[in-house]
Length: 282
Image (tube, rainbow, N blue to C red; front, side, top):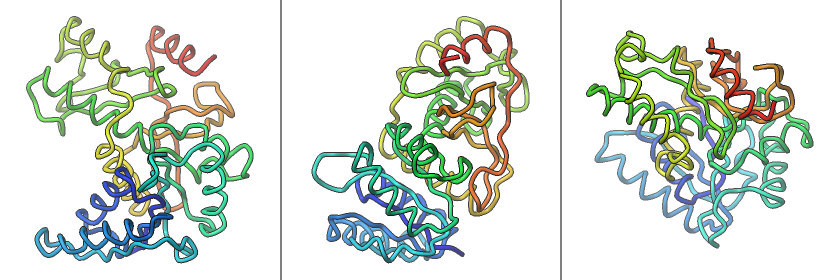
């Protein structure tokens, strides 16, 4: 059982801490924020709820990032106060450099919907290997899309398998040709008008809400720690996928304790390939 550090005790960070605690798959969650009292209060609230939910994860809140040295994985989320939201820009870069100093070889997950530039900075300027830093927000988008597909198909979202490609904030491509519902090809289960209605809503699903972003980050952390066999849609610095290098894009990936273990390139129709080239600026 491992310790996970979440940097930022805002709405996204709090949701990620709650989701990790509820899963009961880690030993300790360390919630870190410059507003240490808020981080400590949220950690205590989630900890006390464990007696009701039956979870046994230990939660601690602090303003001391030095306590995060040696954690198994790190999440960079959003600030608890000040109205400045997700860690990004110059402040985000400074925070990322500090986290890198504590993280040793552990992976770093960016939980926010507006942290693509921070991911690019981490690889191109801070020197992180592209497999060690990734964004989890696309998993929240894929989850929302699966819920909409399930409504159209009148099935459970758990029966829907799909992925999302492209580049935030508005250039997304869904490879419908390989999506499925209950093991059957999605395009056989839904009519063209239904697919058109769903496709028209994809861009409007971004950015996902704080709870969805936090839950997605927790899901990605679990996949990292336990080498999940299910691929996740993650934001990454592309290293040749789709013929693109050194640009940030969404890619399906299998995860492991070191971060991205392997990426997967879906089979695309000619139309989907053209859409993806446009989305990635090709």
